[in-house]
Length: 485
Image (cartoon, rainbow, N blue to C red; front, top):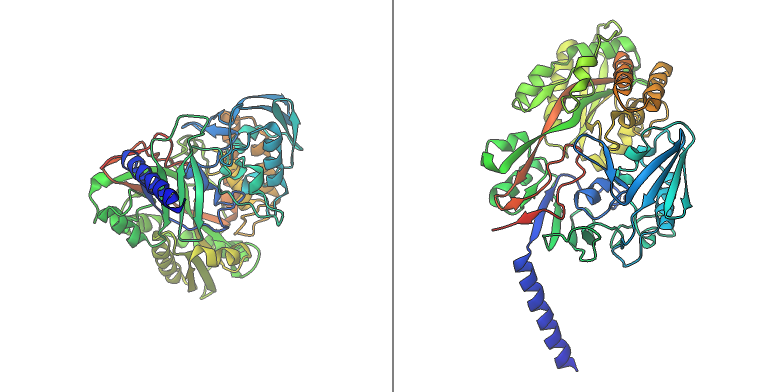
């Protein structure tokens, strides 16, 4: 019996090796480790999405327009109600069926999470089953419900993912072409092809993702071939790498100074204005980014080409002399350019008359302090359309009184009114004008001082084909991605 088992195991290994040779695994060097154990109700959801393991009811096309995914169609019943028909024949990775009841339970779990997913900031949402569909109702008129349901933070997972202690564990719980089989803390994760996928069978046998926070190490992984795809190759490494391996992607990502408006010396609008006037954007783009970025004229960059043409001049407070005012700047090391940006900003503010202290740590060790308002200025590289494909959710999250990511501690009635108007305007030119009005209201407070819009560099080995170069950072390896030697 024992001999038979060993022989069977050897046959299994031989078959596995043959399958791997035919359909190779791909190696990723990821920018940041998980912040919450790959809990899909947090920003970790974007890793699950980039690995094509967790899926949503809706996905966005290149223009940011909602398209069917786990929902095959939808109708707006009234200003506050939407009906989404659920795709049939879909299996979760644990073999259970996707049903309207399971969809409703996943969405309800997101609405009850503490804190709620950022995409639900300011949104009161209920979900109920209606035959082969679910009905999503919002307390307020919300024309962006389909966009919201495209957020990776609202992925639909199997019942087993939701534990009694309130944690959500996404292993073997998604519906995508790859099944997450192993989570190794903040070092790596492994996925295998899911042969029961409802769509096209993945061409790769699996994905091996390593978290490589050090930018120099990511550059080395690309140069040496130890990773097939590398996220966010630092500008400082670009000159050392074969240009054919680097693909520049324009990003809806803005490098911004978040200025503490609630406490500390910069609660004074005149001193915030002094900070704004001291920042030399051109020098930062030229020196730190080696010209691979665009100077910011607002919160929204070239990824939204309509924004610039709609802007009007912003009225700011007059600047006061700093006279040695002490301030603390915080940022994190996970994005290689940010510590360099912090050094340049500190120099510029010192020349303007401030006394500057810097606090630079890994993001996981500094986020809580940033959200608690522990810094006078926090430098952040922020995706402006990460969640819904529309910048309103980002603005609400970061600059409304109740925003869950309000590092600037801003609470301004005029800003909240402008954001509410933008949020309730139907998509189209009127909504875009309302968005620009909200941007102007935010900029007028100097709670946010945008410096530049980034262009991320994605590294790919010559044998990689079909990898997504996604400005929204939602997709990277899909069922269509291939790898050849």
